[in-house]
Amino acid sequence: MSSSSLTSSRKSQNRLAAILVIVGMTLISSNDAIMKLSGEEMSVGQMLFVRGFFAVILFSIYIKASGRPLWPNQMLNKWNWARASCECCATICFITSLTLLPIATASTLVWITPILLTIAAAWFLKEHVSVGRWIAVTVGFGGVLLVTNPFGDSFSLAMLLPLCAAVFVSLRDLVTRKIDQQLDSIYVLLITLLVVTVAGFFMTLTDLRTITVARASWLGLSAVLLGMGFLLQIKAVRIGELSFIAPFSYTGILVAGFWGYAIWNQLPTVFVFSGMALIVGSGIYLLTTNVTDESG
Image 1: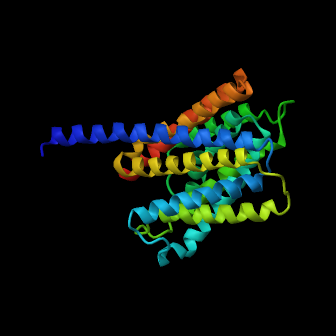
Image 2: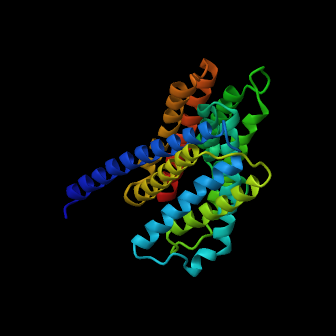
């Protein structure tokens, strides 16, 4: 195959991967909107348990239909459990923040993960971080200050929840490096779903509320959207170049903003919108330069 044909094939794969990321993030952010709506009547534990129950069934059916074993021994690796625990803590923090904050605000603040990972890479992993990336980190934190407005009347302690979720997501990504590369990603997701679902069950015991069939059905839909979103992201990462598709992940913030306005009439202020732009801009820069550095 000629070099021009290879280039054309790669561009085609990247375009498809970008579409998959956009659709995947749209589904995941729509799932977040359902969770926020459900939080008006249900506790966080109930939402995590019911959605997780449906999601575990969904992924189990998918695994069995693909002809793979449902519970391979490699899935019980300690690093897989550690990753699932980090994801569980991040999920609890984020879903709780959705019940207390505008959806666009919560969705934006949790996306400071690339900033935290850059700091962790420099401090703990002793990786070289360029001046440009340190500038991006500074700009990103400036965006966080604009969104949270810590010294203004609009500040809420609930804004610390998506930031805590971002910390746990960063830890999750660091731990993910330790997981055996031969373990299929679907099993990494399955163990995460199991841990979150069990955690939701125990949280439910402390805050029991009536769950209607209609609300359970919405959470079933939420599980489907979440599961499909995850699968599309996995597919995208496997066929596309990370440096190309990474920025498209921020589609989720736009979708969250749309649902926030359409359902709750929540429109970010100029300062909040500016902060969002800084966080997204710095995140895109850090994601793309990180992938470029690693590939180089």
